[in-house]
Length: 529
Image 1 (cartoon, rainbow, N blue to C red):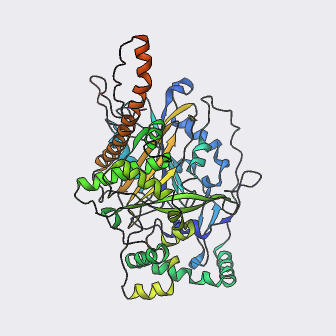
Image 2 (cartoon, rainbow, N blue to C red):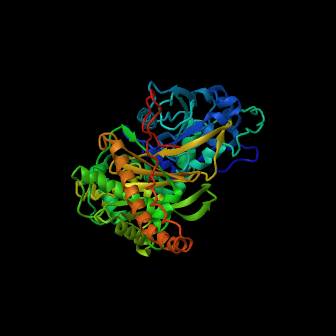
């Protein structure tokens, strides 16, 4: 996202890719991306971080990104893509809010509150972000006293999922000693153009680019959602007849969110089960195993393999967009394979296969058929329109779920001195794609956070447990395979010294499991630190 030399960005027009996220918003599905952080205030000056100090800290850094003060300006009659313009009535205290969980303030309440905030649409007449300081986390397992959360909700049109790390870095520092930021500079918003000027400019662009004239018509055709989605996915992606699950239906406005944290070193041990496998293969295998366990427990596991859509960076940052050029791969998950090691080997073979890469599609194409809107009619051809009008088409799901990487920093970060102990994300879902895994990384840990429709997944804690059990199964196999080698290498030394055989190593926890709280204090099953 390019800035002017003085740190401000002028009026900028959205391109088709970014605008698609605005057009895809509906009453029951929006394109919000939510980042979640939890902090230990004991490292902050005085051992606390007040809401007033956080508010002042954010105010001092508003000029670091145009996202904070710019809002959307729609072109009359939708003759052209919207523009980013400065909000003349910007109110920081509208965007930064202070809430607390009710007693007891446990992990389930935190997830429920975060999912509710994420599901609420943003006000499109204001800058497309909100930030919540959440207190009352006293009953969450392993959190220091006084811990608080920070929930940052941003519209996907304003920032890429992969660019969420940019917002995180803008607000945080790498040391607990807060830098002495200069006082906020006076800010005078630029006056946006009038509606008549926008309409004339849009008409001129439409004349210079005749294909733009069809945009209002194609957006109207987006109402043909179910049939158009099937046709667009069939024509653009040419999917095989993939099985549908409960997550390939129409979603409700309600969301559920859960999370499980794991050690990066343990994922590295898992990947040794298959020569050449990467950590990303191990993460996909854990997600696949969790999805298989969940559907199997409900008696809904298809006989054929399910698949996932996953993003991959294909080119360096595009200077016109200021973001990396992304592509999406459809990855078979091997959910029809019972053996977890064979499933991991299958996934590694698929991700390394040139055939899978050949099935990739550009981010613009994916947005055109609606990553977050199943029927964005920008991708419909005249043949599709004709078939949609006749109600003909196969309902082939794009994929069974999405697995999205939201990279985080590898070193600890601090917010006005308070150390971040947890980082995860809640991703948008849509009709036909009601399950997404957000995979975040931070300070030597990998966090897997599923987001889903509440009606499609009424038991998110059980789903998260299925993911954890899948991880434990793979880690136990990796440790069992490595143990004989360790014993063989240690045996000669033991015989030479006459020492007794080493005791059998105690089984490690495969993931951060809940521990019993102190007597007399109720604790919840939150991720351990």
